[in-house]
Each structure stands twice: as C-alpha cells, then as structure tokens.
Image (cartoon, rainbow, N blue to C red):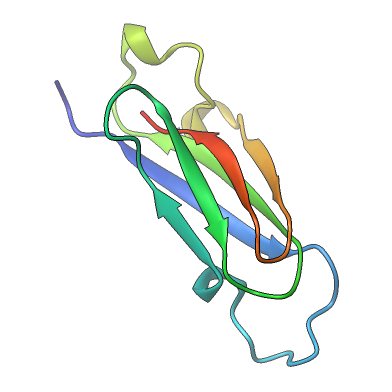
Length: 89
C-alpha cells in the first residue's frame, strides 16, 4: 500500500493574545492503534479549527476521504484544552 500523508491547516477560532503564537504548536494528532479513527488534542486555551485532507496517489479505498488534489477539505472543531475524533488514513 502506498504511503499516505495528511495535510493540515490549523487556525485559531478566536484571535490569539500573542500574534506570534503558532496554532500548530497547540494541536497533537494521535493516530489510531487500529482502524481509521484517531484523535486531535488541543493543548492550548483557544478553540481551534483544524482543516485536513489526504495527499498521495489516488486509491480506491480512499475515495470517501477528503482529497487535497480535488480541493476537498474536512474540518474539525477542537475545544480549548479538549479533543476531537478525526479520520486518519
């Protein structure tokens, strides 16, 4: 199976108090031990919206996922100091 890479764009849902702060330092992706559902954990005090899509060669088993090449992007709303379930493939 070809390797697949998740691309992510992470934005603070509210303006951060420190404009130099990088929202990507707040989020931690925890891939699943098995299956395709993992977790995104937000370690910061701001709510984050995480946009993700899958890159790599087109694969039949990946047709239901958000494909970057097709301009498809999924989003996850991750509460401050919280987590959200996310699809990993």
